[in-house]
Image 1: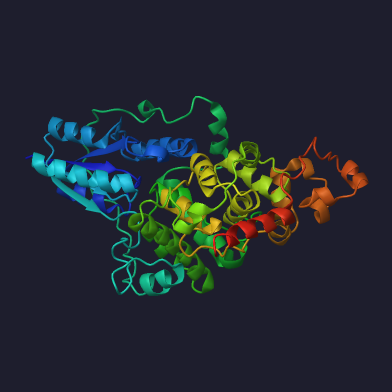
Image 2: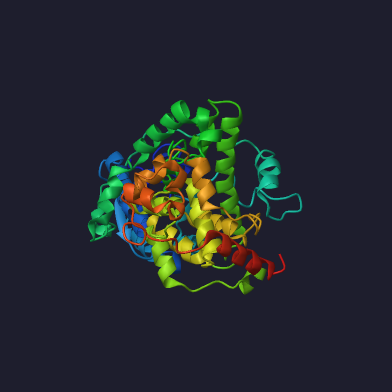
Length: 468
């Protein structure tokens, strides 16, 4: 007797191991593996170009693992699921939950739709260590400050569950749907080809990266993660976002290294959880200032300055290095993310949403919760935000965290011959030294688009005008 047909709906869980919904589906019957590229309700947060590139390759890798059985569709998930459950006489559909506001509402509608059709629906947590409605204060309200969220919420909660195995047996339905290529995720302009030089995509690549991180990098993580040239970071963020690896796998793998390095990495995973908690409980986070008093902040409209920031042509070397790293690799070192974000919102006084939009389009790890919470944190208007007077000085940040200039010289090669003393402040270099280094300010490299001291003072005045 044949087993009943069930659907596993892949979303941000593009893996076979530690996939609770897939494991449940495999235990329930013959599995039709489904992916739906659905931006219908996303509004301004439709998937960006770099993320689409990653998704294409991640789905291709997953399809290989599924022996070519992954069925891909584009459009409204509500319509596609209703059509498929009717077409295949499906008895149940399983999925792992997503937390973007429109997906939460869409899931509710799909549940009601399936119930009306007599089809069972079951959803699982495959993306977070703790559900946002589980990690709450004693009065039942969400945490608004990270430290108690971590110390009381995370460390006071049951430990993250151990990773689950791959389904011991996975009987797959024959393919009868669209292919990955039919989703047309890759852009017509071949700019994306350079991303393939920086990344390996898919579940196996994610597992290999996690193994390398734990065995070779984690032991120096606490201090090394601040230095962009060392790349002493996990680089797991895109794998986590697309679910090629789970946070449970990352959390438990890190326990192999005891001490402060492990705790620091666990805190980074907890910050991801905090961001998701904020997004779930405050769904306007991507669009509105978390602190309403910032609605009166005197942001500047300066399209030319924004364009130069986006292209890494600000005349501030470490800022330009970070923006060029983003453009070339779809990624930016976390320390540098804070520096370039601070420069945009506090030196140029350009709205944080402009920066968030650019990151959303260019980052392979673009994640609505993390992107929104982090930009608001730097801008000073978010939960547990950096104090308004904390304005990163990009010169001192470069000197401190890129002391030999190797990161900056890699991405700003026109300054490569400048000595370290002037690498981060070429406008102060003597004319003869600039000539010797082949640097002509305003020609081979731009003059700064902002005076760091004067713009800092303007930012402080703007912040103080809010009564902060």
